[in-house]
Image (cartoon, rainbow, N blue to C red; front, side, top):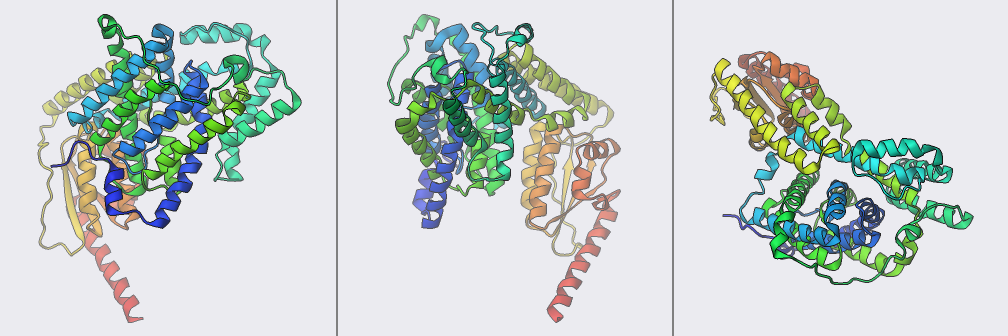
Length: 556
């Protein structure tokens, strides 16, 4: 039986880390620390708190999440997803309310881990996640227009429509310098990777733009003129907690916990795919919980796993939690020695960086892909998206989950009436006349968000032991976008290991869904057969060709 809490760092230290890997982890940690610097400051400012709170979060939470976490490469810290929540909590409850909510969220996350709910959080359907992620991206973009245009508006309304009405009514007051700086920041951030991939574009943009503004004395709002000095020290502070009113923080705390839990586990899953690893979901949740309890005491805000920074870590050679620890120490040194210079960063520059973040968060390709799918997925996607933008993220998640469940139940009821099928047969059949290297797996029943992960895992396990895998889909009445997403990732993994995937008996409606999501082109139309017999004959022919080619090569 697996332990509930078993940090990856402890396991790796026991097994030993090579000197070469240690050097790679240190280098990756330094790079990620540089990447995290502008993002941490930008996320804090956009959340309505002072910039040093973002740095503190990246340092304290980043260290704890790497030290205690269940992923080899997860990088923790403030993320764009929390901007909307933190801003709303600060506006309604103040900084004390934010600290209490974050610490309560930490307790909830630890409970999730202790109750082994790590796997359950993965069952959030893909349209729901894309819906609120895209909604958050739109909100982040809308909150940055004020600084992007250099508008001197003191009080900003929280409602989406009112914000844009105010922007349009003050657009004639736009500061041309701010507009130019915002555009320049976006261009540098996006296109600097064509020159160098070692130094992040956002970091280059901040250094370059800040120097230009200071040397030319451009009249524009900076962090200093807006927030004042950025302290380079830590201070411990505890909020005034009124136990009688503690219940009012349950809703925001639960929102932070759910969003943080889902985002951290999604990040860990993405990282697993990049390094062919397996994270420990319950350990990861407990580590996230500890981080969110401790970080606010030092003046930080809510934290979770950051997908972009985690991917940067992997791409730069990070393979153990030491990279995450080095990332936190790098930021600590930057804060101690260079915090006084960070106050010179123009607000328009931060706005440009966050506009790029919002674009990357928007997942517009996934959004469009889901809109081409089933009406059920479209309803969940648009409902969650619109509720996130125009109402509230907490409401969006709650209604999105309930709506997904209700639509699924209706879908299952309809299928049960029209097409009775058996859903309990993860069936691996043995055919004695098949040549060695050919395996068969049958999916029986609907392929949807709750079963997609399990099916993909089993198919991947069987397929990696084969040269050819025939997947029978004669009893699959429908697939949803989550299943299609996992199915595509599974096929890519198998193809990387030179496993040929064949599909047999695919129904017309399922085949249409596979075409819409470009899975047929991924597999190859010639590898999708009408019947199982045809698939077996084709597999035998391919195996014979492989054997003949191998024999010919051996003779030569």
